[in-house]
Length: 138
Image 1 (cartoon, rainbow, N blue to C red):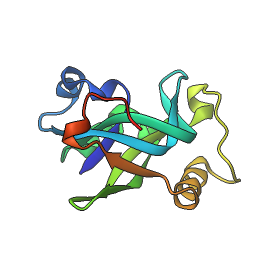
Image 2: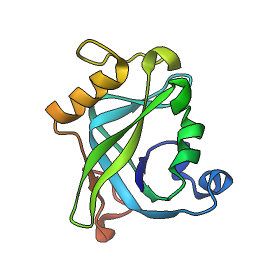
Image 3: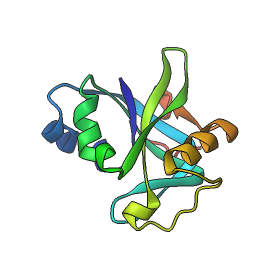
Image 4: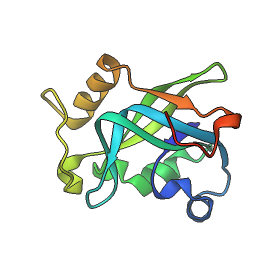
């Protein structure tokens, strides 16, 4: 499974502490969400954030690390603008659980509001072409 990572999991050493098998597919930018700080980093509506695409079959380990079962983060799918990768998982932290100053539009459970935003606001991941790596994202 491909996962867009934007925080501590962009560092190979940190990922190596968590996973036995992984590869970084390349740099990418997540459009439609931006990073914010709370108790742990999370994402908020609008903007963009640079990160990396990580490929692993150990998604359950990442879910445990991100606290999905404890309601800290929700794992959602976001389309990737690449003919080789249809979508990637993204972990979005619940701002109430992470003490982050973020407001998600809509009503209802956190995950439902995130899912609705993703579909209505054209949130997407754009891989960075190899010749553009090292430059600032657009």
